[in-house]
Length: 324
View (cartoon, rainbow, N blue to C red):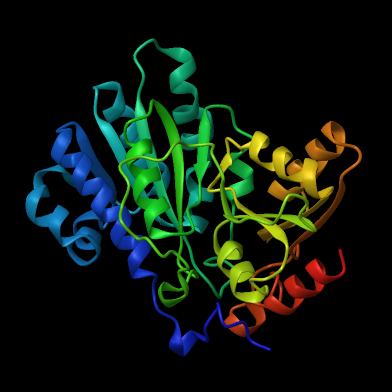
């Protein structure tokens, strides 16, 4: 069964609501802070199509750079040393591999090497269908001191977290998941909030005093879990929103009541975010049973139908919860 959350390639469309919320957040912050500049390959063209208000109002603060992701991030590092708040768009998450040195070995060290704080936000999108255009490298960056990693699953969270990132010292990896469907957002109140603290999860569904299970997830999987599971199930569903820092208190508060933890992640399960959560909960709360559901350690197939088979689908989610 092809998941209702991941559409076929000929039906696939971009999540405009999350994209627009990010653009609105950047626009608001650029209004308030003349030091914010946008950098990246095709930056003018992308803003023209994705965020026309930014293009029309702040064209002089949009800098199109050559096709070199490593160079784009290093350019932003240099700009930040001059007091500029840099937003770098590397387009797809796969291109982050080409900028690993400038992100992990240069940008991430700034806060430790100088007294004046710098703010750099690195944007990237998760795509689908392809060995070099469908990868999810988010877990790699949680290992690097000096980096925060944000993955919102709703427009409201995308807006609030982007505004926070643009006002916080340090380097933030801000991911946009293009596989999240616009028409499946479960928010009943889509009003945009001013800022949302990084490192605070959100309980999307709350069970009774003793839930049958705590389900922890993020990004695309949050939407898939909500679609797959009966709303009457007695579970706590926690949306991480940022995978570094992690909101350990929120997870622990739920698992103390449920004594069962199921971690569902869209990334490769081996060595991923779920592994870190499972290990920490096992150490801190040995009476909690832990189970994981994640993607295969495999090269991403070109066909969307095959891609969706190597990450958790709705049937697997239902089965995992029912048998836990």
